[in-house]
Picture 1 (tube, rainbow, N blue to C red):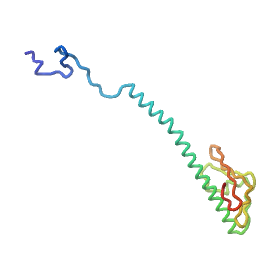
Picture 2 (tube, one colour):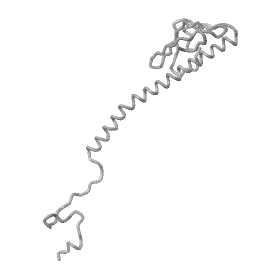
Picture 3 (cartoon, helix red, strand yellow):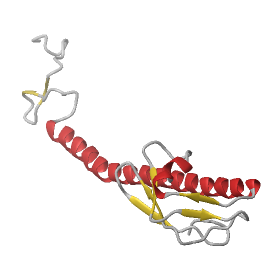
Picture 4 (tube, one colour):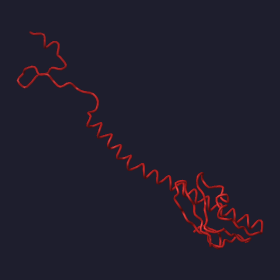
Length: 149
């Protein structure tokens, strides 16, 4: 007896011919190829998802601003009706007439906005909502109820 049978070595195994053969050690972790593949898949997903997320946030902010503009138009109508006097808002005073706009947004107009004492708009003024990055949304108040078209 050589004593090898009593104390087996972990890295040694029996080969086909019955002789001792060194086995491969088990390595923990990931190979460089696996890590690079995972990183590239994450980068690809981010490249696709980030622009979509940014556009979604911009559309949400635009909806909030358009809602604030419509709410402001309703407030101006009520003010004209309650005071029983017509309102005229000059183009340079347009942003001040809509205080509920999100920060950085402003309103411009091509002509003064006229609201009658009965709460009717003239329908001739084109309102332009300008975002902080200078995107434009144009709306014309409807003549009958000042709703934005």
